Length: 354
Image (cartoon, rainbow, N blue to C red):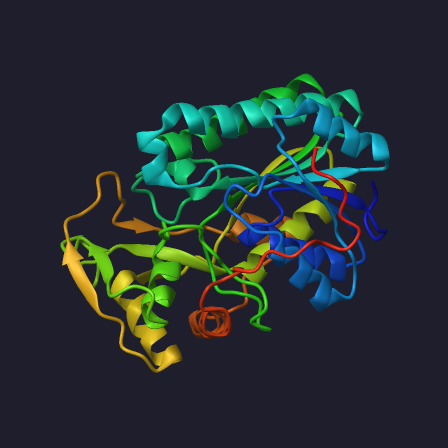
């Protein structure tokens, strides 16, 4: 794999929110994309819309990374050079209630993917990690070399996989691995054709706010207003999903020229409180967002902010979209798609599922 040429990339979990936006970015850069997704929390309609936006086709396989034979079929069909690994369960609350399911899916599934990649000599990987690996570390902004102390099963699955990948690369220098620790992805493609479409109640603030704005929910629950922050509500680092997609493309390009394992925060370094987000979205949408103050959630940190300076130094990457952009694009998506990707459509040239 070398920078500056088209690469054939396997995207796991590519029908999801971050995956679909990253695929769009990579298609625009000229790469060829194969997607494997079991559609547990997504719909393939997202890929149809990516194809419409780019004028290029995506090869889609409905399957699970836990299924070795399915992965082997994909790799046998040939020429995969790199993998971007998004597939995984991601709801913190659900992970507390169903830890075994999260460890089986997120950790065991990744082990199966890695073993199959290794068997086929494919050793370029971008891994979708999370700022949850930092836990409630009070050191702000969060730097990549801080000790990891995830506080819930979801975060621990990301932390465990990071350790597996660190050990793997230390044992076999042929592996080139990027660990991308996201902060809070929000927004949508400016076309309004693709965006975030939670299957069930949203787990994050932004899609909950958009669903209240469009009339699907009656109010936003604000968890705690007694934190040591300017207005008492939790402060988070929100990053536009298109900036996040650009970060994946930059990491892939970096791996083309650099060996080893590399870790980068993908965030803005700027924080906004829950009430600031609600106010900004009211301004973008011209609607009123009712909210209710409720008790804190266990384990929530008062503030979580990225130090993104390493990504700027190594990758030349920096988030450029503003909070106003995030709100405007998220509102455009929600207005145009009040029910999300509700209609399922067959993909052009789609083969049978694994």
